Structures are given as structure tokens and as C-alpha cells.
Image: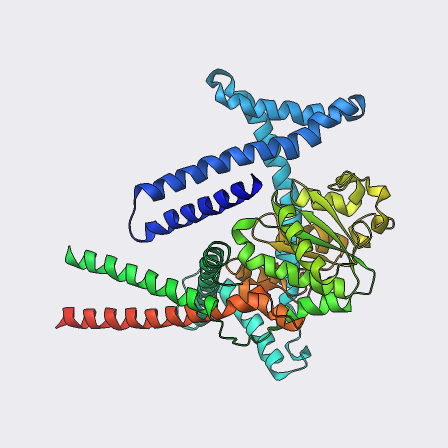
Length: 212
Length: 276
């Protein structure tokens, strides 16, 4: 029976792969069917997964095994229930309280961490001695890092009209930005081709057994 | 109307040629070599120089949708860590991450059949809440993971006897395809507990993480996409799935360059024709 289910699952995956690929020819009912099954299946999967891997072990099981030891968990449980009250128009205002708490705590945690990791450490990382590198390419790289950072930031300085000599760093900044966009595009192409390779590997290996 | 129809047909030809171009190298591998980048070397150096018997964390922060890129990295890095006799804690900030971890362990166990669960590696499971969970791990790992996936209590797992929080971890390796992932580990583990962080990510996310590989050592190297995975396989001297797939990747990139060239020539000629 398990062998049959494995084969059935394999053919199902092949069917959905071709159905999704068929969109490349043109929009069609098979593509729409696959898309909608995927959306429905994902929603159902996540709901079940969240109940069994988050709600039950982190709340229900703890309260059943040691209620008074975990009595503080009733607070997040109540906030969670309050969040669900959005579905009742008359009392949906209650859901604003848990949302406010979530936004407040998230902002508090993020502000501290982002300031340290994305601002202070990133600025410190550009305050380097360019000649400290051991190789010529390293020194050039350090100079590019410093020039690119300063000119890139300067490009977004809009408080004064950039003309004449003050427009030069901005133009250099544009070049750095364009090169970084090009690199990002290259990486995006690589990621998308990787997805295609993954699907083709599945078709050629698991389904057709053409490759090992 | 015919111009629209022509464009549609051209699009289909591009897709078809690309499909064939990617499929052929998978069936008939070419064996092109991959140059190792400094970022992949940095990640390799961190694992290579970490002492024997150190306990490390592999965080599987991805799901099957990106496993083509990230699974080869996970398998190669796990292989490297075990070759250095490091003890691996597998956790996941993504719900399906532990399934990816299981696959990686199954693949690595083929080369290291003597590795024992609980002594050489352990799966602590998925934890929700991203950076909040990581910050809590900085205080106490046992508090966040009271038991492993099999239900064994944290205190009863031999390899975790002296591991209390992230400060006792030699390094964190996050294989991440989004949020939460590498960035949260940098913020929560590197910048708070000073635990070195390395990792791998999808090609599309890689440019966003490169600034963290800096003089502050926020990130010790980074593997970005399938190419970096094949670089890592080159570094550990193994021909893995990423190396094989890189032939298809390279052919596809060459083809896309050709298409861009043809598209530009065509656009140039059309513009010229319109002007005359």
C-alpha cells in the first residue's frame, strides 16, 4: 500500500509540475486548478502545523501538565483570543489591544537590535584603514568600499540641489548603485534557474530515472 | 496584433530553448570547474579552524521550496563539520526545517556511519518567534528546548552536558532562505553573545547579506546560491549535487546572455527603422 501511495504521490507531483509549467504557454484551467489547490493546501497545512507544533506544546500541554506553574501563559492565550474577535464586527475593537502590544514589543526589540547590527556595526565596518589590507586588490577593495558607501549615501541627500562639483559624488554613487543592481539581477537569475534545475532534476531523476 | 502574437511566440521559444539547455547538462554533465570565492573560503575556514569536539549549531531556516540551493550547502557543511569531529545541534526557525535537517543527516551518515545520535548530533526541533527565541537561547538553551525531537530531556543528552547558552557554542551556521534566518542570527547571536555566525542563503537573498561580511566579522563568510554550494563541495574535495547542477546553471547563464544580446540588437534595429 505504501508503495502504491509513493508512486501515486510521484505522479501527482509530476502532474502538478507540468500543470504549473503549462502557464508558460498560456493561462489555462489546469494551471488555475493547480494554483488554487496549492493555495488551499498551504493554508490547511499551516493551520494544522501551527496547532500541533505551537499551540498544543507551548500552551495546552503546559497548562494541562502544570497549570499553576504556567498560569502566566493565560495572558498570551487571552490576547490570542482577543485577536480572533476581529471576525465579530460589533466587538472587533477588542483586537486592537493585542495588535498594539505586538507592534509595541516588536518595535522595541527591533529598534535596539537594528540600531546595533544595521547602523553602528555597519558604519564601523566602513571606518577602516584602506592600506591595512595585505594585497593590492585588498587595498583597492577597501577604497571602493569607502568611496562607494560615501557616494551611495550622498546620492540620497536631497536637502540641497546637486549641481556643479557637488553633483560629482552623486554621479559616482549612481554608478555604484547600478553595479549593485546588476549584481543583484545576476543573483536573481541564478536563483530562478536553480528552481528550474530543481524541478527538472525531479522529473529526470525521480520520475524518468534518466539521471542518477 | 501580429506584433503581440510574435512576442508571445518568441517568449515560448525562449522558454523551450532554456528548458532544453538546462536539461541537457543534467543528462550529459560537462564537468566545468568552479572557482572558489573568498566568501566561501571564509565560511570553510571557520569550520576548518574550529577545534575538535566543539559543539556547533546548524540552523535549518528553509523549506523544500529552496532546497535545490540550500540542501547541497547543508550536506557539504555538515560533512565538513563531522570530518573535523564537531558535534552538531540541529534546530530550525522554519517549521519544515527539521525535515531538511533529517535529510542532511541521512546523507552525511552514509559517509560517517559511526556518528551517534545524542553524542555527535542532536535534533532539538523547530522554535517559533525568530529573534526572540535566539535571544532566549543566549540566556539558556535548555529553557528554549526543554527536550529534543525524540522527547529526551535536555539534561539527559550527553553532548549537551556542558552547553548552557549560545556563548558555549563554537559557531552558528544558518542555512536560510528568508526571515527568520541569517540576519536574526547575526542580531541575536553574533552581536549579543559574540558567537561567530556563518551560513548559506539563496542566490536571490545573497546580495542583501554580503555587507555583513565585513571588518566587524558580523558574518564569517557566506554561501550564496548553487554556485557557492559547488564552491564548498570543491573546498571539501567532493563532487556533490551542486557541482553537477552547476553545468546546467552555467549553460543557462550563457544562453540568457545570448538572449539579452539578441534582444538588444532587435530593439536597436527596430528603433533605427522607426527613425527612418
